[in-house]
Length: 177
Image (cartoon, rainbow, N blue to C red):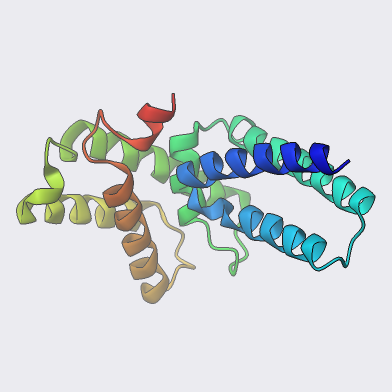
């Protein structure tokens, strides 16, 4: 049983690492996995209960992977969509559709026009990316997003783009494919 648990934990850890790399909003799954391991190591759960928890987590991870398909988004657009969503707000289906459209539009504009070679090294191109993010989000985030929320979302999206896209062709999604 211990060998099975070890193999399963290793496979889940690798899977989670890949999933979180593509979409930071999945960190909650990693935190949950860590807590499960901590509880098991503290002997608050027996091996059978821990195995059942791991199997349940695997099912949740499979469902999370299918979410992009259900939303008709690829991993790249899903990461932006998740960044733009705000769980503290009651969003209508129309709001969610508008946010989804905004994520798709933003990615298209950035990759086509803004993420040029070495864009991160020049202040002018970094500013151009920030302005494009602000313009697209201004047109596509619901009015329920306060100016503070809007600014926070713009910063989160910019940070994601900065970390994930050295340029339009070389990005974490292209490397993962």
